[in-house]
Image 1 (cartoon, helix red, strand yellow):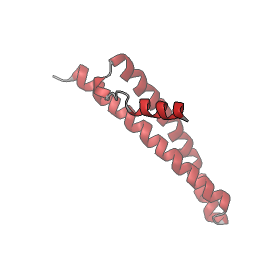
Image 2: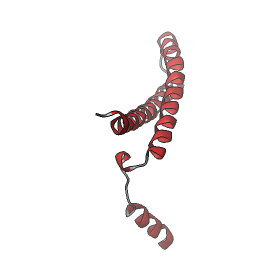
Image 3: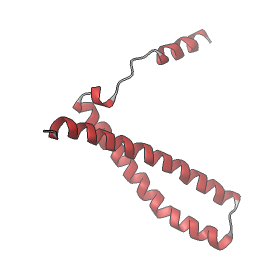
Length: 100
C-alpha cells in the first residue's frame, strides 16, 4: 500500500505542461492523432446513430437500445474531447507560425 501511495503522490506532484509550452514536434503529432481519432469515431457514430434512432422509433426502447444510446453518448464525449484537443493544437501551431 505504501508503494501505491508514493506513486499517487508522485503523480500528483508532477510538472504539468500546457500545450503552448510544448515543442512543435510534440504538438503536431498530438493534434494529428486527435484529429484522426475524432474523425474516425465521428464517422462511426454518424453511420450508426440514425439507424439506431429509426429502429428505436419502430420497436420502442429496450434495455439493449438504452445501452446503445449510452455507449454512443460516451463515444460522443470522446469525439468532443479529441476534436477540441485537435483544434487547440491547430490554434497553437497557427499562432506560432502564421501570426504577424
